[in-house]
Length: 194
Image 1 (tube, rainbow, N blue to C red):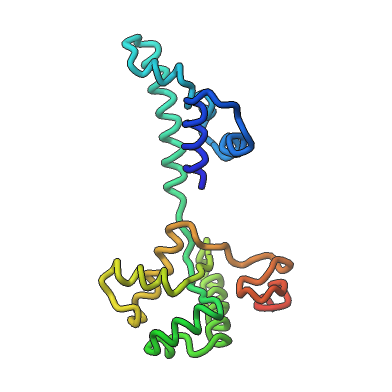
Image 2 (cartoon, one colour; image 1 turned 90 degrees about the vertical axis):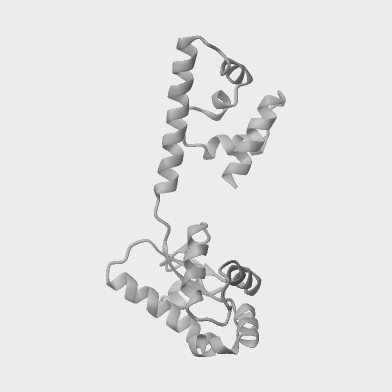
């Protein structure tokens, strides 16, 4: 989403359009030392063809600052995530791939095992835990991309890791007053956080 807002900001700046709320949001989300307005300044873009050493050194410094920001963002580790299937998705998954019934049994068992796994990981000191939510179409597409069968239980951890790497994980544990990760609508403290 941030890259979309940044690209939109650049295009609007080059077109000479006034900032709108989305441009302001792009500026707020931008964390580099050089502000977006300066990075997307049409005059600066024309100076890229310059042979003036002062302008070129300034541009190199700006680009290094921007690159440093991207490197920092890319170096953040993604969470160790466990895979959660919402009720309807789990039903559809087990209907389509009954071989996975041993892995998930039923919804209650799935939710209890998921919370227990997270608590065990937390107890061993594993940092940065999260939960990713699976969907059957996404899982089937992932299986196809891996040239594997969706009925293979060994594929499930890879799917969870891929979702986490794409930024789809929600942090665990939630606060006791936040909605529970299971989708019950009950606060975590009164649901799986008991």
